[in-house]
Image 1: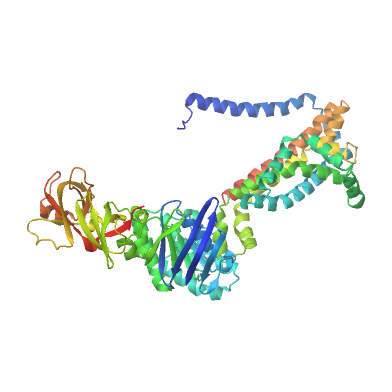
Image 2: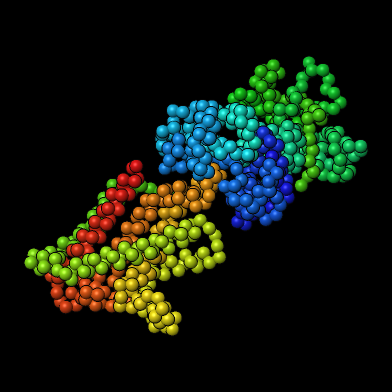
Length: 360
Length: 264
């Protein structure tokens, strides 16, 4: 549905370069990145508010790179929602049809259906100023769909909401996406929001496209150290490729005093960074069957951090070794009888769950 | 860290506000010393005063209309777009504010004495010592102010709203008239009335371009000047009162209009 090829766009002194991105019809694609990564510039290039210096933006086979905004047929929900404060809810929702001079008989069925799904019926006569945060979000979302858009652009529209309202809105987006077969481009810095709503993710960092792929791929195999840092990964250890053959590398990690065999290609002597998610590190005790050869076991002293729904264990394998973070449910802590400051605790790093990236 | 004023600072600030009020009210009330009922009556209902009031209202209205016609698109462009010469344009807008009206009027007069000015007057409208000259003098004086006030009004309307309107299928003109203009309405009304009031009270530039000819280019401020020059203090006071009443009525109307739309 949306295809962005070799796109370079500029916003003031900031430049977003060489973006390649595709969104299939009916799919939700999240564009993730920290502040200043170029998310808004990319959104502006698709929206038509940022000039495109090079490359193409195609939407449903139309090259819309230089089309006026009003001809692109996009639904747009900005961060501040962009509701028209001088109009009632009903007039906000009817704005698109009136602007396009669509007869009421034509637009009414779609509008009624959307109002029905989102439960906005009781709010139609209300002025925007009297709506709660969640109600405003729903009005903005429905209004964006009234023009039957080919692509819906969501620019961090749920950041101002509290946790429970935010989840409610995520479900509403999912329901609407299923019901209407919407193609959505979601711009956000919220990892949970991106993983909840999107099937595919693109990570932008400092104006570059660092990674694009399925959310599982981005989650499991960050393409660079910058992406790993952005995703909040803490278990990152410097290593050097000792051997390389037939799509596998063996990397020596001196800080953990261990060697890992991982899939991929890199020349011998290449500096790399090994990583593993904290929920993929396993706790091991004597009762466990011996670990498979593909799992390195490290022993150290632990600190236990209470995160409410789960515990985070910080294991220090040696005085100069980096801390290994392990996320486990509380019942596991109780099962292992772990105490804060306990020594001799063993954790396993299964190679199947590890990834590596080139050291910067 | 900002601090709210304590009781002493609070009282001092209220005293300052009341002092401002007392200052202006005192000046106006002091006119009563020279107020003569018979002269006031004669002046108010004289043909010459009627002419001055009519001329002032007409010239101020035409000048304001012309200024707003140019100022609305100019202010919108300055508020919304980056273009070559934008900074220079914004600086030039300060020009009528920092240069005295008399100097502005002199500039206009000098312009009409150069070959281009002479050609323009001969082939289009004659400005010097005419009604058109009064309008031109007022127009030049208020244009910068009206653009600045209108730009501030447009700046208050987030660009995002226009972008959303356009994604909903509205062209840029439609989004301007259905979103930007209604939301900038209060600022527009304020700009309209204040620039009109400023045009009404304009003196220096008008005197330079249109002169001070009784029953011809005698706007209210010019009439005040002419009567004062002839040491007709009572007549001057009567005309000042007319000007004050018209000006205050305009400001009161503006406040009522803005108050009503703010609560609509």
